[in-house]
Each structure stands twice: as C-alpha cells, then as structure tokens.
Length: 348
Image 1 (tube, helix red, strand yellow):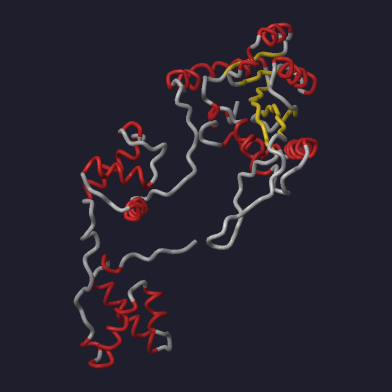
Image 2 (cartoon, one colour):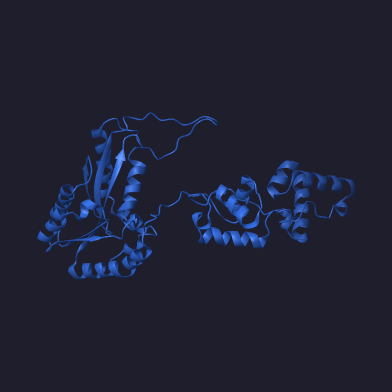
C-alpha cells in the first residue's frame, strides 16, 4: 500500500526546518537531490534551492520563507460549500436532486456543483475533490426501486424475529433459498492487455445456460438442484422433497416472492407436509436480505475461472463442482451470513 506524505505547505516552521537539515545531511551522505526530495515529500526545486544556499553561505543562508500558495487557496469551492455537497452525496440520490444519473459519479457531482453554486468545474477537478473528501469509486449495490421500506422494517423487527423464535421452539433448521442462472458466455472478471488495446475472450454459444436452486443454513449446510429452463412449481416441490429427504427434523424454508414459490400446487404440497415443513416469504423486491444471494455471487465469480464452457453438460458440471466443494466448507457458507445486509440472521 503506497504511503501518501502530507503537503509540506501545511507543516509548521519547526518541521520545515528539520526537513531542510535532513535534506542537506542526505545530500552530504551521498544521496542525489532527486532521491532526497522524493523521500522527504518536497519538490526537487526546493531541495536544489536549499542546497545552493547552504553551499554558498552555510546554514544561516538557508531560506526561511515559504514558497507556493497556502494549502486550500485557489480552490473553486469553499470549505462550507464542500461540507454541504458532501451532506447531499451522503443523504440524497442524483434523482432526488433532479440530476440525470443512476449513481453519484464524477459527471453527476459536476452537475450538482453547477446546480447548487452555478460553478462549472472540470471533471478531473471533481475527481480531486472527491478523493480529498474521502470518496472512492465502488461497484454500486443494487436496490429495488419498488421495495417497500415499511415492509422491510416489519420483516427485520417483527416477522423474522418471530420466525426465529418459532424455529428455536421447534428445533427447526432454517434454509434460505434462491434461484440463479449462469450463462456459458458470461465472465464477470477482468483481463490484462496492452495500453490502448482491449482484453478479449472467445465466447461460446450465448444460448448455453444452466440454472440452480439452492438453500443454505447459518450453520453451514448446503443443498442444491441444477436444472435447465425456468423454475416451476413442480421443480420447486422437487427441491423441497430433497430437503425433507436429506435434512432431519423440522425445516423452515425462507424464499423470495417468485411466482413459482407460491403456486397453488406448492401451497397444497407444503400443507401436506406441515408436520415437518414450513415456507416463509421475504419482503418483496428485497434480494439483499437473502444470504443465498451472496452464494450466487460467489458462484458466478468462480464458475468460469478455468475458461468458458462450450456445452450445457460442461456448464452443469462446473456448477455442481463448485457446489460440492461448498458441501465440505461449512465455515465458508457461514461467511455469506456476515454481509451487513444479512447478519440479522447469522445466528439463531
């Protein structure tokens, strides 16, 4: 990790004098002026000026005045304006403020500055402000626009705690379940190439795709079923049968609101097995509350590491290999529950 030295213009007179003496000592010890400047974090011209003055008149000839403009002068935005903009970035989305952008990127912040203060700031300068304020570029997390915050709050504060209490009373194993699909031509990673050239990858038939339904418990248990095509009530019942066959005792299944999960056939089948099985539904449009989503992300990030498959059979084999490996790694499975969005169900 690279260490960033503070701007010498912000240092006290005593610290600057110590830097001057160390610079002179370094040059006398055989270091080049460029090396000394780099190590002390000052301009090469400054070190040269110190050395020239010292060789001409000794220590008493060292310049004591400060050069360069004071830190903060010449900036387009005042500290008060910067603080106000940061408050908006932390509490509002671009659409909240009438800015046409999906996230707070440099262009959106540039437009925000123009809207708030009538100042036209270059994109590069916007990036410098963002770095100075402590913002870094990140891949945005997904948040459904149709999500009902009251429904989420009720789930976190009332519904799930009640389910958890009931599970303890019945000594039930809770499985968070979800479906995902993997395409043979999808590769989420990066590749290196010469500057100015694009990294390329040979992709197979884009219609090669395999799907999976899986379930995980916060104690590290994993169950899964791969299939082609869409999830149907019949396929979901097949997966529930697998759970009943391979997991002893009572089972609580938590799923999203996919239509196949709540079909009449599923409801009727679950009622027939209510002595051992219950199904509960997450708030609508809230995939981030399901820890199995983070297994899906893990799968998509690793299943093509050895290259893109060219047949459905190979793709299915890759998915199954990844999942069978997870069966032997309960602590890794438990780590999915440590994400801040789902640590509410990490124990229980």
